[in-house]
Length: 280
Image (cartoon, rainbow, N blue to C red):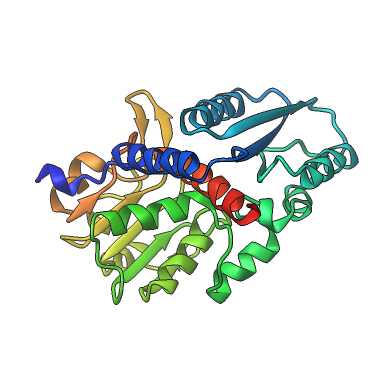
């Protein structure tokens, strides 16, 4: 398989960050501001937030992290979000998931102003996405679309199958593909003949969180395969796709790690800069 068929998210994310840094310098004035709220001491969340902080620093975004105790009440968290909503130096707000049981992630997402909702989870932004309007949309699907366009993957008229129906990836991915005139099917645990359905796809997006679940039997030769999953196994980090065996028959494929993962933070920064430009 030609190396050009491996879609490197890591390489593309560097280009995105470089362009954002140039935009920030060119526009000047107050730098973009991103506020991240983290509740508790989840190790994975700590790592993600640290990565976001470093990425912000590299492009010129002012990053603030608000750390709250695991026992924080929903009212206290909503008060903190209200303070950030009113802070004119903050263009983007995100609340790192997961949240403790006493806090509703849906209520928190709805409390963030839509124009500062850089995760793209506010109902207003969800509505704008499905209506084909401008807004702030979930970072991972937006990054995937940008990566495919960067590599001239044909989307208009393509048959696309998304395996997984989460609000974070599956559903917004479907909306974005529809906006680009793909024919979209969202598959899930209740789908009958999943293999047969996937084998019809020109674009196959795997977002189920099951290591190496997508094997060659699921893949149409020449298809573009986007692997959103990442799992830690005895063999290291692997995706939802059996990369070693699927790669030779695919037309293009994202690796794990280094594929979709780096795009998520890059397009979080992109959403923050977009919000900053609108505020300016």
